[in-house]
Length: 147
Image 1 (cartoon, rainbow, N blue to C red):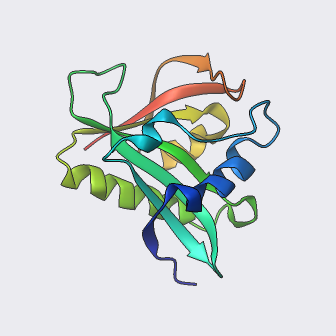
Image 2 (cartoon, rainbow, N blue to C red):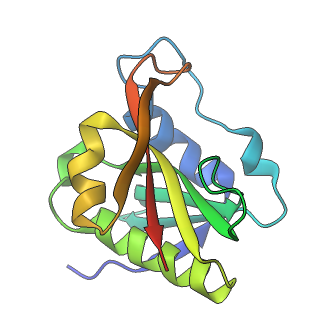
């Protein structure tokens, strides 16, 4: 099945973010301050009129390498029933291309430890100490990919 990555609105991606990223957590919403950044881009894959994969990308310095032009990935979510179909990798590739077009030298994210294998498969490296993400209460690491 062909999956086209397209630019979506925040309202398009919020339901999937909540479904995937807030499942089993104490926080019922999944909007971020960065969603209002003028350069924020919400990428997604739509099937049968439903957003089944999404990620958001915006310029923001990495706290561990704040002297490098960087793009942050946030809100990465793929419908659980479609895990393993390559949708996440497609979103990462599209976001990396966007970051490269912006002249970024680094892409980074605050990744759940449970998703580190996915990020490593996508050529990211976990850096720094782990931490507990406040909204989810789940362990995370910063992951980076140099462009």
